Length: 521
Figure (cartoon, rainbow, N blue to C red):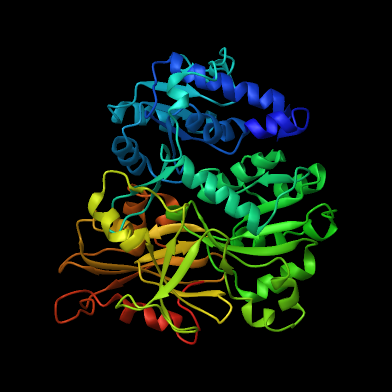
């Protein structure tokens, strides 16, 4: 932010409803926040959790908390309270920042999480009794630039802990340093240059790593942040039109919703120059439809939280050329692009050897954007970070002769539905909360709206009776709604197993993906 304040102090930095701030005004708030947080008794290295809808104050969490030498734990508000309780306790957060939509959730977490000392309100209504007002913290007198603890912030200093699902059923915290986040913001700028005149709409949830990377990249350039509370196609389209938005980053599900909204064809979207999309592959047919309906260039991004998150990007001409039938772009419409400048990618066989072009293997990634490791998970860190700090992604893919990556499956037992990662072990643990369940296997099956949806195969104990609705109901008590199975098959016969007794989940999954050229959507 220092660069933007120095070079573009009078340029619009924030558009959030009726709130409009220049970079000089926004920078003053963020500098005050450092002092305000410390006035509470927080110090360098302390974890501050946040939960809330998109807003300029939510952006201030990402910019201001790490700048104060503290660690942001931005919570996924779609999780159930028991899941959030585990994350807050695991991170040891001392303060929780929440907006008006999540006051009750925050109060429950304060009761359940012994480490929480402070509740901070960053909503738009009056501050609840017993809470600290976020705006009061931002109004504090800024610390001197020479403050010793601020000088101690280096590239290796922990900036954020971003939680992802875990293969053991428990979420794990990805440790991102200042160096990780800023390096990947620069990678994004090289791959898809942003301009000082750009106006970026924050439509995807701000707790997502991709939105954070774009936040830093755009702030580097001094562009404008246009905030909407959350994605809804009518609101999104209206805001792009009214605010002359130039850049957006959303997931394929959101794009499809926009294309099918009745108001979209009549809107003036001529300001829109770039649409970046990612989190899950985009089917070719909706992509071709988007190219015919929307005026912008389309870029697919590929990455993961552990890479802060950007790894690959297509070129801005790829999708347009592909839609016109121009080769090789046409053959690359299903690709997620080439490694961005500054990031290395290798496709490796099981023995660790690098694959030949078009040979399928696991994706390995290396670069200054790769996480420090998993918070308090040394064994999982050691398993994920191979020799020379290559990160094992768990994605199965092949690359063509020009390095374009095609993801075909996942080595990890994970589903991506509507852009959200869902680890099947977490869902299985929730299903087992029903006392009649004997066995369960959860996996992803194709879905035309969300790419994949969660499916559960459940074997019940003898002399019991369970319905699919019963399974769904028990899951809703323990996990976020987006993880709850959308289809449930109740079985009387045992699940197929290997000689060692392991459930052969692929045997159950394969019939649903028959005749598809890849096992992910």
